[in-house]
Length: 281
Image (cartoon, rainbow, N blue to C red):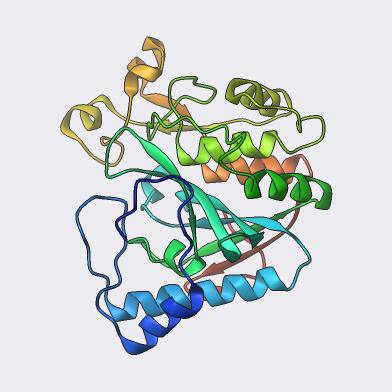
């Protein structure tokens, strides 16, 4: 779907999108580029099925918020599964289980915060319909949910976007960095954090460690997976020469939450099947 460039947009109603899927409406669209893309009825139906699975799992727990990851880009060459993560808020003004997340705008160097229904969240031109939920400890979840419902106040959002934003950068931010910083502002002793750098510093001192993504110089020059919307100059010269870039990834966020005991539970689906034990992220 082509995104309206206004922050914290209206969530799309689950029932309406399910109706579109059943009816086979060809006008459903997805994607963060500015060109219009028509999504097939089959893909909308698949997104609706994933949304129903996720919503049913969320309803099983008395939690006001959780993290939900999706596979929007194939990162298997980097050893990663999930490329994007957002928050899902139960009692949001836009509807029950509204996804709140940061998205790049039209392939530019800008981003906005969006509030969307779950079907729309899983309709965004994804590689597949794999999904993972991570729940937080109750006290942290309550603080985080309150902060998300109050957006855009205290949003910690930096609209200058880079896909490979350096962790802790003041000048750039990507979707995973925003998620980490909001989490850091909701953990014990972090509730009063209102500055991005302070949020990242808190997470780093608390044990967060970014992943390192290798981007050869040839890929930088010739283009490829990380060529668009990526500010390489956000990183020091030594990093650019080595090609090993520290980046906040979905995996590094989930590992941090698990290692520090902030995660209270997980659930994952691969190829539409519930996994007995969540696999690598």
